[in-house]
Amino acid sequence: MPSRKFGDGEVVRGRWPGSSLYYEVEVLSQDSKSHLYTVKYKDGTELELKESDIKPLTSFRQRKSGSSSSSPSRRRGSRSRSRSRSPGRPPKSLRRSASQHAEIKERRKLEINLTPLVLKQSGNSISRYNGEPDRIERNDIAHRNIQNKSYLSQESSYLATQYSLRPRKEEIKFEEIISKEERNITKGPKSLRTFEMTATEPEDFEFGGGFGAFSIMIGLPVMLFMLLLMCREEDPSLANLPPPLPPLANLWETRVFGVCLLWFFLQALFHLLPIGKVVEGTPLCSGRRLKYRLNGFYAFILTSVVIGTSLYWGIELYYVYDHFLQFAVAATVFSVALSIYLYVRSLKAPKDELSPGKSGNIVYDFFIGRELNPRIGHFDLKYFCELRPGLIGWVVINLIMLLAEMKVQQRETPSVAMVLVNSFQLVYVVDALWNEEALLTTMDIIHDGFGFMLAFGDLVWVPFVYSLQAFYLVRHPNEVSWLFASIIIALKLSGYVVFRCANSQKNAFRKNPNDPNLAHLKIIHTSSGKNLLVSGWWGFVRHPNYLGDLIMALSWSLPCGFNHILPYIYVIYFTILLIHREARDEHQCKKKYGLAWEKYCQRVPYRIFPYIY
Image 1 (cartoon, one colour):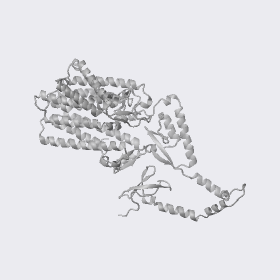
Image 2: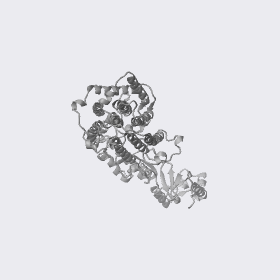
Image 3: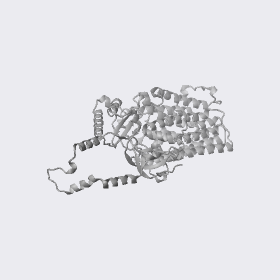
Image 4: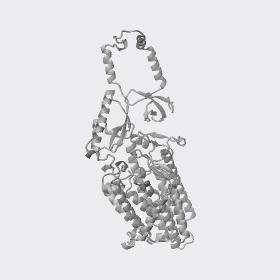
């Protein structure tokens, strides 16, 4: 095996591909099979070079010093500067022959100017800017016109940092063309300026576009009510589908809707209390950072006090179980009303406060959400709904199901299966509230608008579907042996370790990439200024936090036994959800990071759901 000529961390000169120019680089590693060196340029670009394309710094220094000492022209030039000359006579250094003038002119033509070109990706096109982010929304047609005139190929849309190998004069003309075209766009016709480049193009629609969004808005409530009705049946098998429907008049009770409103505003009151630290979120498109108060865990403690006091005073919480379907209907009505309010208010929102996922399609935008961070004063509606009413309500519903099981089955103590389900899901909710700050870096907060998708998901789907296992166990008891319970607990703990460690590592790296505790992690530099983790938990598999999520979801259903598939509907749904999230993340990262993401995929080839997309 040949020995290495250059060691890791050594500073050398590396040849830029396609040219004869050498630049100072740092050796990162060498592939033992291909014998290629991975080097890092000063601008952060990482490339693989052959050993013949790398030279030690000493060879350049010796060549430079040798040429300067042996050049007779320089010695003559130094002597000529010391001589006196006539004011009207040019110095010898400027008196050149015609052949010398032609040689210098030709050399200037061939002079290469390495100018960093920062290309910002937007949809299927790219824009050029220097330093500051481009905050001008462009029309797609006008923006493609820039591409054609600036001679940028479609293949370069995945590169965010390149070098121009044009002669200096041609580069100046190139800059003039770019600045002229950008001025034309900002001063162009109003019909062009009002179309937002950040709007989602038809091929970028999620969930099948407008038709898919409409189908989901109809299908999810229907699926929810079918699951709840099936849980009440003595034999909730697929052979008994569809379950008998109750009279429509029995699905609505004003008192139940009032309890839902009371719960929502109680959590809003806890959220507004001046307790907990205030942090800043990620920068918006305008560069502004919104402030958020982290007091979700305190709200959970206060809610626990309220529930405990209610039990002490003898308030019958069994009422929630007895009217569970009516509560689901009331929560659905409230989420639809909230979605309508959010869409109407978004029509008057400034453009820089809209979500990058908006499309211009009314149905799709109503579903996905137009406004990114709708606020009433300092009260952030989306941030509040993500963790408070639905997530804390999920734990309260589980507790009510535990008490209902004891009453329906005439037990003195709850079953082992019910205790496992309650304990597992309680740990999950407490973990989310304790690590509340991590929510600020999720796609829900930084990318998705607040529309029906999040409103229904946060306020209806989470509390009523995620509690499906506890609701199922009330009428379908399952005895769990201590051995099987131990296996389920081990499975839950392993999933939680993967989930929490992966998320903590990601959040710590996003918060402070220069943290000394993270110095051992390997990264890939990207043109956007962010880095990709390729070691630690994120070096084993892509999206390891999703893997932990899936393992925990399975552990929640196992205590229900294997008599019916109904308790595992949640696992099936959660798997489909994670497949969608993983595919969306892959698509977004490929657009955002370009070639750096392709290199990441080579370094971390394993996925949770291979061959799915």
